[in-house]
Length: 105
Image 1 (tube, rainbow, N blue to C red):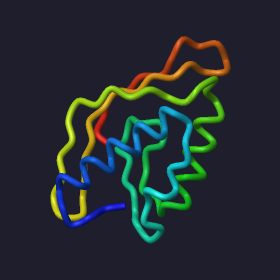
Image 2: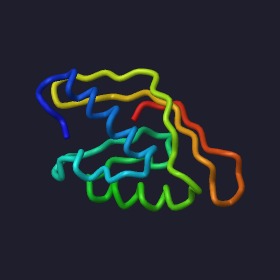
Image 3: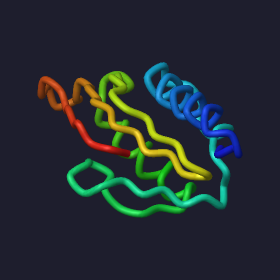
Image 4: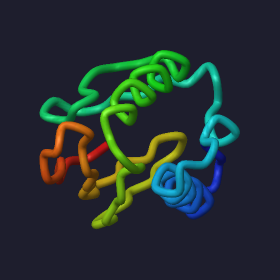
């Protein structure tokens, strides 16, 4: 997923969030050898190889009646790293109103 151009990396991250919200395939956006860190306080907190992250995301998203929606607040890119600060919202299958988080991912 990550390119050498910071601006291109920001575009890729925005595309990732757009595809998740649309329920589209996100695998083509990942480098399979990459490691993802999701900060504490998020539903998927932890460090993951890409394959494990995708499995965890699939399990979490199965609890939603529709894919999550994202409000992007900040994106910072440097070298092969990108940090995203966004808000997410999703209706859950257990009739809870939604899940929101305002955390960097």
